[in-house]
Amino acid sequence: MNVAALVGRTLAKLGAGHAFGVVGSGNFHLTNALRGNGVPFTAARHEGGAATMADAYSRMSGLVSVLSTHQGCGLSNAATGIAEAAKSRTPMIVLTADAAGAAVRSNFRIDQDGFARSLGAVPERVHSAASAVADTVRAFRTAQNERRTVVLSVPLDVQAQPAPDGTPDRLMPVLPGGRIRPDAVLVRGLADCLSHAKRPVFVAGRGARAAGSELKMLAAHSGALLATSAVASGLFAGEEFNLGIAGGFSTPETAALISEADLIIGWGCTLNMWTMRHGSLIHPDAVVVQVDVEDSALGANRDIHLGVLGDCAVTAADVLAELRAVRPEPLENYRTADVAGRIAAGSRWQDVPVQDISTPEQIDPRVLTLELDRLLPAERLVSVDSGNFMGYPSTHLTVPDEFGFCFTQAFQSIGLGLSTAIGAALARPDRLPVLGTGDGGFLMGISELETAVRLRLPLVAIVYNDAAYGAEVHHFGAAPEPVDMAAVTFPDTDIAAIARGCGAAGITVRSTADLAGVTEWLAGPRDAPLVIDAKIANDGGAWWLAEAFKGH
Image (tube, rainbow, N blue to C red; front, side, top):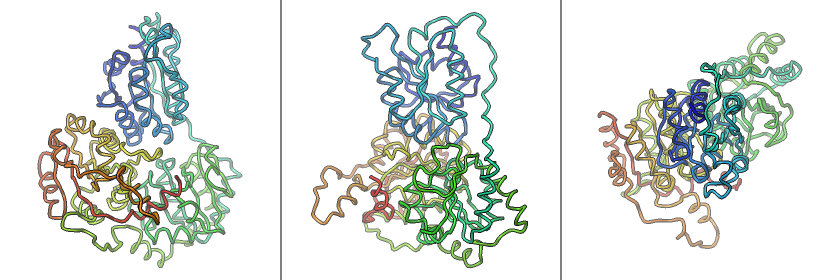
């Protein structure tokens, strides 16, 4: 056994969940070592797609995923996907070859450690045969326990070294680290805030996805309303006092109720400009609290009155015990009959009336999405690309829980949607994968449609096709003087025909009547993706777009 085989075996025994990549000469043996030791491997058509698949898989499975790349150019091809994962604190190993130490003039040589740092990832490397197991374990522990994206470089000359005698054959899986318990003084402080509040609102982010039950119990006792950031959408599905997504995707009623709060607590949520609409959702007199396991996240985006360093589930349980000690009976506070009525009537976009802007040739994107919400099975996993369209699948498609929505938007890149949907689908094969994407993003990542076809995924891809980079058209088109849009508008593309050419099913939709093809596909074997080329009417710029561009 050589080091390449040893590293692959070690990652498998530590608990790597699934590997994705494009195999070249540099990572051929590393990838086969993973496969040979039982780690499933999906071959993508581009390293950028593979990176996003690995990111989405980890988000939806809770396991450490692996991205396998060739040295130099293979790694650089994956840059955007790695940056997205790093910004999202996705536990992921980028297992990459590196140029041999003596090959100083190799065409593949780049500063891979510096490259990783520039993307926000943690650089690690296998230094020698003697340290290979320790180096690999260190990288894996960092990924899992610190929720970091780690780039583990294995130089070609090190890969070829024989494994040292006495290399342990058995390794225990790396278990998640202990959860951080908050300081008792901070627990009392947060309980005091809740005991004095009249209109508390909880906003849960991705860092609170494992704390749903604890937050629901604390909210019920303290009389708080529940909301999420976009990435945690679905966490409080089915709750009577669930406001849905806070921020740019909020309904008018949800935004109003949050802005009336006198206490806002961000649970595993940094309360950034998107979630708080650049602070406009925070009442000037409101008390703002953050709970997070990362100290640097506390107060990172806005002034806070109290920052609590601790695991969200543990903190919520401790605060509930403290609150019950001083206020044994549940508090009504914001959970009144009037508020319940407001939430029932206006917290979901499905209940907001639509003035249909469809034309004979184009369908209103809201009408399209609402009809698909009715047609598609409820047990679904929605993934969303970036663009002017993105609010429609994010808000008008319901999801069953926090594992029904995958939102790779930390880097705000278009083109990640299709790969996101593939990775998410492999993590949750029990759910129908649904993709919402624009024509620009879909065409940017279309090489991975072959991957979805090869995997026989029952993927429904909704392409909101406006033959443009719609966000730029609407943003710059709002200028008082006419602006040349030739750089961001294109001839109409027959995306349905392209999909059929790749082996998928493809339909063109200009009206709800054309959605009969969806019903037919659902009734069939679902052994190939369905691509819906929806020619959408001009929405004049999505409702959330003006807010989004304030952050550029």
